[in-house]
Image (cartoon, rainbow, N blue to C red; front, top):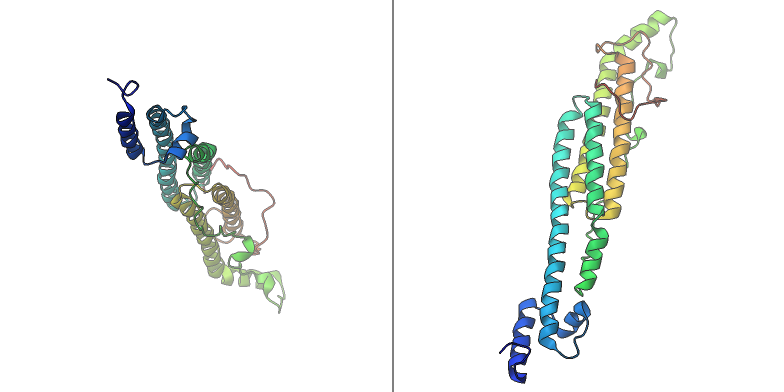
Length: 256
């Protein structure tokens, strides 16, 4: 005799077994599947199937977050190698991949909220996350310049001699600026990857800052090229100021 035709005690025993299996109260089960006119075993059975599907969907969302975290760490690792090499187009490609990963996780947000509500559970509390630091050009080491000498110069030859004298310091300052921006960019990606991009606001701000850091890095590359050319020697007129480059391509076709 099945559960539909069994007497009261048997039906109650079956219901208790099913309730134990899903570890949910009767009121929670009713919230999940609606009421079954007092037919508790039928309600519990339906709830088991519904909850099972919901948990499977949550697991799938968690898999997306876990994959995003792993992918983000891999992107950070590649950026760590590409930035010192000046591979600007490859860096841009990695940032495109970063944004795509963030968007995939963002696509699970509403699903996760809905499933937690269906299961009668509170959505996980937001973790305390570090602030996404914004790096500005003014935060970088200054570039030494002959124009900063208050004494001035008697002629252009004297000025050129001073520029030649400053060249080692200028080269060092350019390297420090590039290193600082590169380290910042990698750190931003690593922080976002650590939480799997699961916090929407944090993920958006991280991607935005990564894009900004990339533009700042391109600017630093252009400034070094301006001062030292492609062969690493000072050009005839070394400005050496930390002024902004008027136009820097976002996706250059060549790498320095």
